Image 1: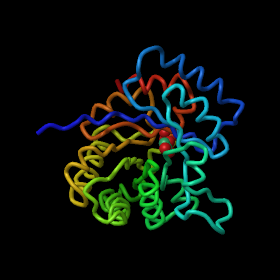
Image 2: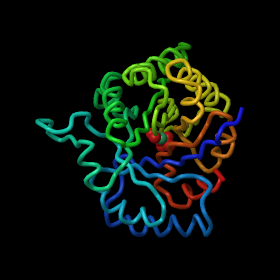
Image 3: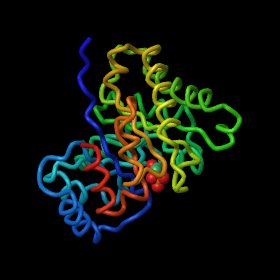
Length: 257
Ligand code: PGA
């Protein structure tokens, strides 16, 4: 059986950081650090709404994709403070994070909301990077599979058991590893990634599962990235802190290929 290799995806998540004046310097330094030659991975940065247009202008010529960090599922209407898919596309953006644990934790995003957004993203042709992951208490109570399974099932059920999943990307981000400097071990991450892929086989198809990219996130850094990426079911990383530093993130991209 032949299987097309999954192109690695290195995605930065800037969270609520950076101003437009920092962008030219950042992308210049990042390109310099990356060096000549085609990178061995796709590169993406999820940036605050205010930076989307300018970041895209600077990143697109370098073959780097810019994504939003959130989106609303409705096409328009009385949703003060929200941004629609059409609005993202209006400024040339074709990808977004959905259901990051900080959105779930601090802004009350439910599995149902995440499912709705993911369904809308696929319908709109916007690449959804959907985040799942357990808290420390849940891991310690041996509930990792149950929690990640529930989060994933909500999304997959919302899609109605399709044979293919388009450009869906899943990011496994254990909450206890995010911003703590305490990454999951490569074995812990691989276990959950394998679990996620098997769940996708059950809901969708072997083919969809084989082409699905599953990113690891949570204190990924230049020192641990190679070992994480060497795991069979880890197809890239969603990187917070280290993606704010051009040299660190460039080193992580280089480690991918
Ligand atoms: P971190 O964040 O790399 O700073 O742990 C990852 C994330 O929240 O996406």
